Structure formats: structure tokens, C-alpha cells
Length: 154
Image (cartoon, rainbow, N blue to C red; front, side, top):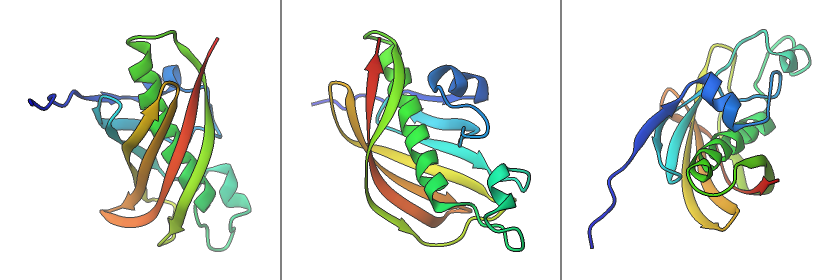
């Protein structure tokens, strides 16, 4: 059996905003690189001190909230699911987060860091998708989780 070749692609911020309903301050990815169909991709988040959550988390020692790392993973995975579905079925209007499993936070993420969300599809059935994600800064694992999402069409 011959393996399908990878369809590597990218999505800049304008394309990400076409694929996802999220907007500032809740859009947690700046671009997506190395997209291989709906199988895997890497999302990029540039963490900056001027983000609103740093006023309270924590002003004297700002740390990017772990829950937002998980949200960034979900948005990265959701965007490639939507992009994949746009090629065939009806356009998805929303992506709903369904599950978070095995979430672990390894190291703090600080302003100035560039987070890479490495997402790999583990399964999908119709409009439901599951991914394993790793968040890395300079190649070092800072968080990981398994997530599930559902695409909704209107």
C-alpha cells in the first residue's frame, strides 16, 4: 500500500481568522505552519507583555496561563479541521471544544516566548476530532494534552 504524500501548507493570521470565529483578546494563535492536511500541524503564538491576562496573572512575575496554552492547542487543531472540511462538506460555522484529557504543565511560559503548538490527529468520526498536542518553547516541552472538538455546520 502506498502512503499518501504530505500536503504541507501554512495559514497566516488572516487565514486563521477566516477559519476560526475567535478574535482578540481570545485568539490564541498567530499563524499555523507545516500543515499536513488534517493530520498534523504546528501553530505559533507570540507571547507579549501587552496581553490583557498579564495584568492579573501575575503583575510582578507574568506567567502565560496554562488554560490558554490548552486553548491555543484547541484553536490550532480546530483551524486545520475547518480547513480540511472546507474542501468537501458544508462550511463549518463553529468549532466546539469537547474534551481535555491528560493535561500536564511542565514549565512556565513568559512574555517574549514563542510557543509552538504541535498537534497530531489521533482519530476522527464525521464531525468529531481528537488530537494529541504538545506546546514547546525553544524545543522544550512546556505543556501537553489530548483534546477533542466538534465541528458544527449550519
